[in-house]
Image (cartoon, rainbow, N blue to C red; front, top):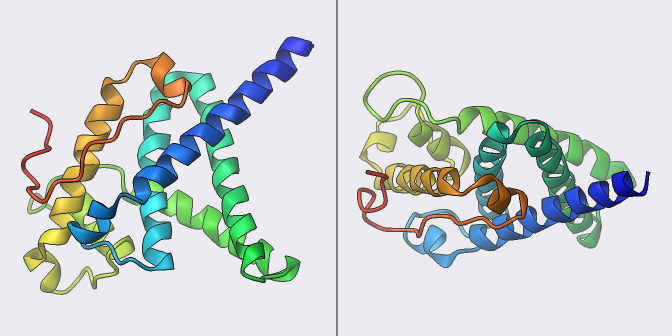
Length: 192
């Protein structure tokens, strides 16, 4: 029985470590300066959700353990947002609906950021999802195709996915994540 408590504690610790790594990466100045992510509360939250979706996707191949770590990661994210809401003075009555909205947003982002076809190949793309959620661009307008920011950020996401996929199971489950560097040249970081 003691082993179960120890394992549960380790899962929680790993989920928290993964979340801390995601937040640190989401604070990378180049995401804002070079990829055009708005440096606002919403922009920062969307950047965290983007990285959260990438990591949750990486945990899927790890089976039941990956699912358990992913659950602890989500719990750490929700606890952090809950704390932040309370720190800015939102009371119990306001926190619960916002947390429910956050849970829906996480699910939506995980679905939308699933890597679809590249731009121009039909169907919803990662670029479109990034334009919609992170950059808050009107996705049905002509400006999205002309804007280099969605492609730049999508290239970073694809390169980060490739880096995370290259990590072995033990590294991922220990919370040791390695994201791609942010590059202004979208082609530079695409996996070969």
